[in-house]
Length: 304
Image (cartoon, rainbow, N blue to C red; front, top):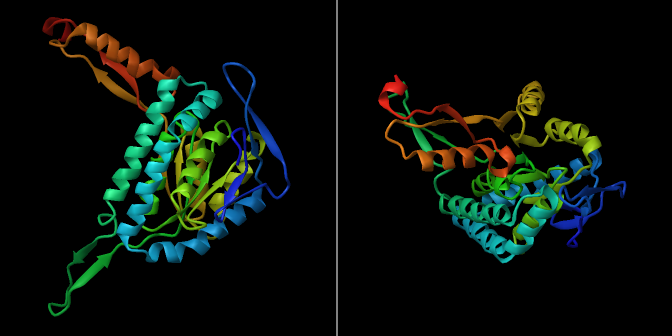
């Protein structure tokens, strides 16, 4: 992988797409080339999922604290590449330097949080039995291959929304990068490689915008994919939910929304206005937790 052109990461190795095709991402501020990426097809999806499937059993068999050590190492690697990742975020999505730095900070926090929760995700529960001489227990097990479809608006931070939690409990992952931020997400995947994760545990697919639908369809339909995580628009989330349901596969969807912002009578209005503006318009309003102003009042009489 170079600094301005990345390829697919499958089975622990960077490789071109089966067709050798690539596509170009433009810097939304300058209009210049921000990155070039491999344009994956359905054959590449199959290669990535199969690599994750082959890596699943040995990864799941590791002691939880060993998986936690790998994630801690990945957090360290992200910190070591913090400037590089933040620069890629600015170039590909047009965000300011502070937004790139914040993405790196939160991704590291999520990796370390997951590492610290290594023994919490696979606990068991005692289940009541009709037989007084029998004790039953339900024990959680990793599902298998998880597909994580990551968006562009927080391209490093939102890798942390699904990938660390999936890995720490023993799943393996195929990440589908956003068509707009492939370099950013490739750099994050390189950090997993820098941390020494076994081959195939984390894989990356990049695709051109015009074949996004067929790539996502191939991921959802693949016989070895057990779970799907998607962060993005409500419209696409509905489509993914329908397709996952047709294959009886569980999907976690983090979609667009507005968070209520209520200002009470005793609030500091200057601070409230500043917070409302930031919550609504930070990152150009491109966030699933943007604020929605519900009521703004100056006194109890007006509140009534």
